Length: 99
Image (cartoon, rainbow, N blue to C red):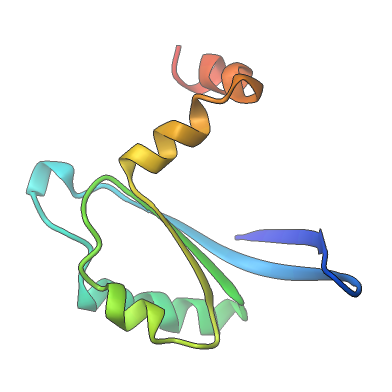
């Protein structure tokens, strides 16, 4: 869980995010409908208004997740995660967790 504090167009706001990592690469499985239903329930349980999924395989539950108007949803696959990590400002993070 992560609490984002941001400045909106009119005022400051906070958004609670549920962050999950899914690693199905070795099983050759995608993140599907079963996981999507669980995600929505999990977000409701902790009153999260945002959901970030970081995974190493495809997301096939896109329609189920994106159809939920209550959640702000972000999806990072392995390419997008690598793009974010490879920014110069994150080099210390890489050195710490990926020696």
